[in-house]
Image (cartoon, rainbow, N blue to C red; front, top):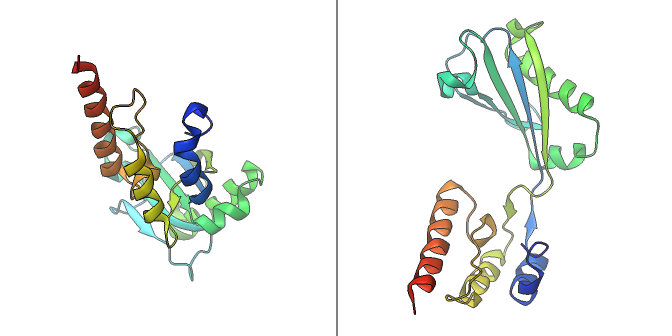
Amino acid sequence: AARICPEQASLLQPLDSGLKYTQAITVAFGLRKRPDCRSFLVQMPRVEDREVALVFLDHNKSPDRAPAGQGLIDCHWSHEGASEMMDRPDSEILSRSEATVLRLFPELRGQLLFGHVTRWRHALPLTAVGAYRKIGQFNASMPLDSPIQFAADYMSAAGQNTAVELGTRAAERLLKRRATP
């Protein structure tokens, strides 16, 4: 927000300089066949896998996520693993993620159609001690009648509900401003 809205720097700067973010890597694998597993999520404890934290079987979440009979698996890396591998080549990240998938589902050996790496250098707010105080100060300092309203994950606890709530709040403020003569 500070980069795309420099005219609001005085409002954004205190929070921008004080709030840190996690980094994230996800790897999606298209599969020729689905593994024999009805779960939609496998959590990976650090003692089992230091880099990959979660494995989603997207085809089990919803049937439209992959063609009939085929599968889609997403590996979500831990913040620490993602930070260490962020600048490594896709081939290394794919190979490391594939090793986890094949350890969990050995029947998928030779069944991977493709792999795709996605990186987020700023994934989720890392809310260290004092972060919510800064977030509260930011929210309290935002002019209610400004033609620019912010709605983002850095304004509360990150999540879809937060995005919906803050987006609705920003829209209501803008509609009220427009309706006021």
